[in-house]
Each structure stands twice: as structure tokens, then as C-alpha cells.
Amino acid sequence: MSNKEYKTSEYVVAFIDILGSSDAIKKDADNSLNVVHRAYEKAIEEYEGLFENISGHRIKKPISKIFSDNIVVAIQYSQEKYKRSAFLATAMISAMIQIEFLNHGWLTRGGIAAGSFFCDEIMVWGKALVSAYELENKVAVYPRVVIDPDLIRQLNLALADKDDNAKQWIRQDRDGLFYIEYLSNYLKNLEIFIISEIERVDENIVENVKSIKVCQKWIWLGSYLNERLAEIIKESSENNGKTNEEQRD
Image (cartoon, rainbow, N blue to C red):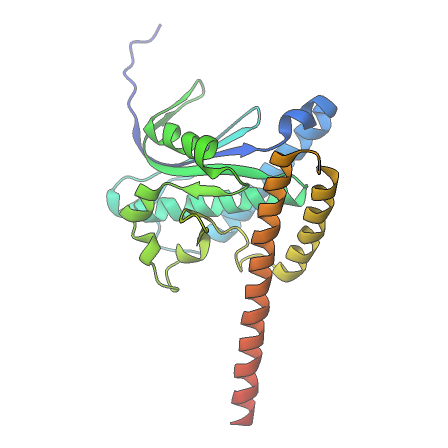
């Protein structure tokens, strides 16, 4: 037995639950295993390709653990001034995870918090993990990754302007909570993707009509998708209007 003393460090932590995975495992363990593995690998690949283009972020590579139907992603920051960068990276990874699982028809829900955290090959531990888990388990409800209100205040995210990199990755819900905006403009063919997912939502509502809890989650997703689609159409219309004015000038 080692007498080594272990200590926590400061991290931004995301705890993400893969919804409906228990039923998927019971139905076909090998197929569900491959879906989860591939979706996660693709998400990390997409994150690395995107984040490397953003300079000036002195943070370490993400630590991640998958156990059963839960994913933990943690990014350490050495100083308080790098917490925003750690949050931005965690938000990006969370967005990629939600997108890739949605591509396979799987919903995800989670929480993001900052604070003490420890992880090695044996265990994960810490206040940030507990806070992120409680957000997922008790607060998020719908397929969204909710951000700890304390973290929103610490980073002034609610007041961030449109040029702030973090701004495009957060969205405020009707209940006042902020969550990850995973349908960000980084996604190619976003409008087409949203339209196809709206069709998937309608199919799942019909399929799960006898399960109120399941339907609630798909209905929330449908509302989110339709809101984003309306925003994209509006932005496109405004940009076309500006282009036409410039051509007339």
C-alpha cells in the first residue's frame, strides 16, 4: 500500500448522462457500446480540430472518464485568470458530445461546475464533480447541459458581449438557467441538420406517447430546435438584406 498523499486541483468539470442508455444496453449491449464509443471519439476529434484554432488558452488537455451511461470531462486551470479558457474548452467538448450523440438519436443531459477535482486510473473525486452531478441529476431535467449559476457569475458570462468566444456557447432558458448552446454556428449545414432533427423529434414523440417523462424531453428539444431554426432564418434574411443594400450602393 502506498503512503502517497493525494490532492485535488482546480478544474472545470462536466458531468453528462446519456439518456435512455440502460434500455439500449438491455436491448443490444454490443451495438450500444459501439454507438457510445464512436460518438465520444468523434466528439473529442471535433473538439481538438476546433479548439486548436483558438490561441492564447493556457490550459491542459481534457481528462475524461466514461462509466456506464455517464461521461465526465474535466479541464484543469492553473490560475484563476485561466478559468474562462477552461470553461470555454469544457463547453466546446460538451457541445460536441451532445451533437454526436444526437446524430445517433440519443439525448444527453448534464451539468458544468468549477472547483476542486481529482482523477486518476482508480477514481474521480471532488466538489466540482458533485456540483456538476447535482446539476445534471436535480436541475437540468431536459436534454441540456446546465451551467452552475455561480460559474456564470464568476465569469460574467451573462454580461458577455457577442464578440466574446464564450458567448456563442451559452444560452439562457425560460427558467433563467444557462445551458450549453450546442447548435452553434461552428456546425456545417446547421439549418439542414436542425430540420432533420425536428423530424426525429416528431417521430420520437409519437413513439413514446405513453411515456410522459420521455415525451417531455423530446418536446423540449423540439422547442429548442425550432427556436434556433427561426434565428438562423432571421439572420440569413438580415444578411441578404444587407448584401442587397450594398449592391444598390
